[in-house]
Length: 365
Image 1 (cartoon, one colour):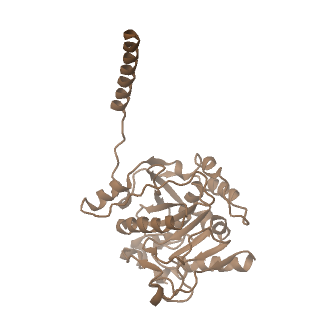
Image 2 (cartoon, helix red, strand yellow; image 1 turned 90 degrees about the horizontal axis):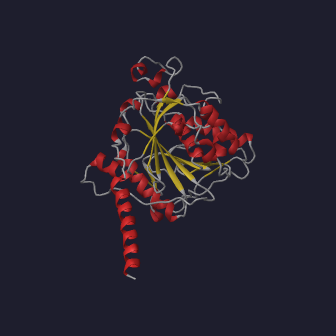
Image 3 (cartoon, rainbow, N blue to C red; image 1 turned 30 degrees about the vertical axis):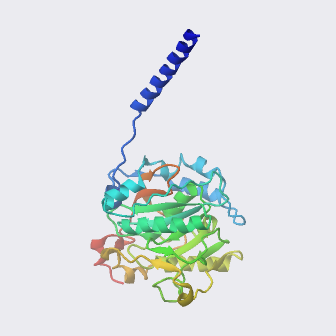
């Protein structure tokens, strides 16, 4: 009896020693600071064959009737995609601490796991440059809003890390491609400084066409008819039908109007392509439908507004032709709802000299 007990005790001791050895020698990768990526160009861009990916994504979402994206998209395209460039992990909470210091009372980290096979998956595409305060607030408050409405989602934050002026349209095009690769079947084209407040704003799977969530009367600061910026939701199939945003608009201004023209033309060309909007909201009795976090754009990005309106963008210039290099993708793990994509855009200065701040002064409307 004693020998039997001793044998079992020895076996248990061996197992415990093995477990301690495994735990003791496990290497936990250090969490990198993210501010050098958010605020400065990365050093080694990697060019990617985007057209190969784009054609395959288009093939997966060509069924305009259902808007469903094959569950095989993510698995099939990963090895070809721009997301095969350099990859790192990061902690959103640790990054926020690096950016803002320990005094920040709002270090957002919400454990969030996407269902293994959700019926629909929303990709929130957010063009970004040096607006960390807005990003953490958007991620926290919009995430809470979407979970309240039982909407499965991921954020795709497109960081423009080159020396050129901001190009919101090109970043949107790259973000929609990334959302496709991660298995999303619809996207929210989202300004970083807008947070929904009203339950009448619908982030659910839209009809074919476009759901403009922030038209005149809903957007907290834009007061003119025809405005088409802010937040718009589209099936990826709808986005491909209009070829996304024009890539010629550097600095702020013009890209939304050009996109509205594309959407409007599609409503005339396709009988199933419609533009829908939220119902009227009485701000006096129901409150503001959106919160505006305030503007922090760079002055150098504003100065081409009057120049941009003179560009004429061909229909072939858009999602299918965006030129960029993917430097690095930052994602944490399956619990993380934010994917950062650090990218450099390409610019032909003979065609669009306004990408270069020094050349803006020489361009006359």
